[in-house]
Image 1 (cartoon, rainbow over the protein chains, first blue to last red):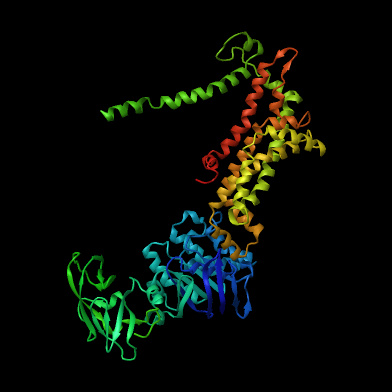
Image 2 (image 1 turned 90 degrees about the vertical axis):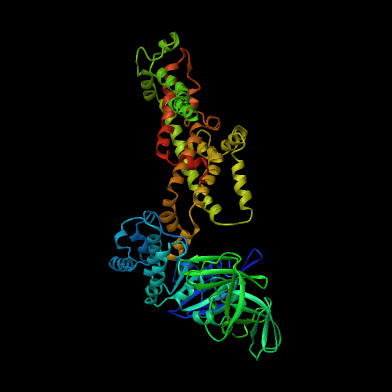
Length: 351
Length: 274
């Protein structure tokens, strides 16, 4: 079990990580989700002990490991860039942590070969990393992290620099490969879809703050703040200011939606996920609105329709190919039951 | 029309570099030709190639201790200097490349300013200091004096090469459990091997061609070859042939070293920042 207790990192007066407490269970898969510069890498480095926190402590299995040299920690790390030892063969690259741990040669051979088998590197064991493709290089780095059998495995956007197909493949395999080792897996990513596909727990990060931590699906379905909802939405979350009076929200765009009776009258911010907008009414709670299309993007089987609404840019994600011209008037439906309600300062108030 | 001009240029374009190279090679050829001539032929008139081919000049150099010891002295202090410069510059360059400390950028630049002063201004203080420590006329004296400009240069070149190696490699090695020295020699050094080669070349070259400090700090036992060459005027007049042969032999070590680092030299001139 890894525990961060009020860990903070401040570099040259800039807060990279605000005081953060997290505890990660043994054998769990944890995703750090947030845009670039949100502090994912900083947090990973603090967990690893590569950087020393400005304040707070890091605990591993009940022991304070703050400031302990990474050499003495039992961890493994894989970076976004493919980091291997170019002067060694793939076999020696993977064997490197075992050699340093003075593992018997026969066992090294067995472990390296089984890791190579798992990551489909067997044909390349005698080559050097720089003669391999990017995917193979990254698999070498992953194999090295795997053989070590570390208690804490940190993956910093490990698939970001790989091509699409490989990324899909490895993303599926990675959790399985590391699950058997019983180690804590921490996976940093910028992509909400990746977090959802990986499952496990997710911590959303925003400007150095962990905004929410919990089972991935819960965080996605019930974000506790507007920031979390925005971080965990791809394409971006549509937001709009609204004023509640009586039984309805009056939106900036001149639309009224039914409001829960439990809320007091006053200003609110509403969030609508792009796929909760549709071209036809999906259920009884759907509310119609008319939108003037700004631009349409088509990705094979889905269409992204951008349109201005109440002074902000909204986007609808809808299945099928819909070729609207800019300026076209389109009737849409908002699934009012799925609308997320936030207070003006961004606290979630139930959906 | 344009294509025609282009074609004509393509046909004669090679002439320009050819002439340029010829122009550069003439003095070297002349030196070689002179070294293979007799003194009588050199002084008697103008000949394009040796009429009476002789290796006597080279024989003089290889048999006379006052000549060949000059080479041995030069090579000794040059190698000593290259080794010292690298040994000092490797850790320094690593520190500049990987750590941030108070005044690091100023110190880095200050190092380089040592190259901006002509060696002549250091000749006098060095002579006094080295005399006080009884280092005059030793190889180590010259080797240390040349560190003045070679260490900063080595730090600059190596820092460029080292900064080209991602820091993540260092971290991965530490995570794997490498101790610093083991990481440095087993993982890091092979990655900057070409940089070390280029650095060694530059140290070798600058130390090899430097004459002023080398001749100031030596008298007999560590006298460099270039200093020996300046006093070949004997009672029998100037010994042109032997002097030319000595010159030819002085070019060789540099040419040999260049051969080994020819693929990396451009990167070296850019201080590793290509």
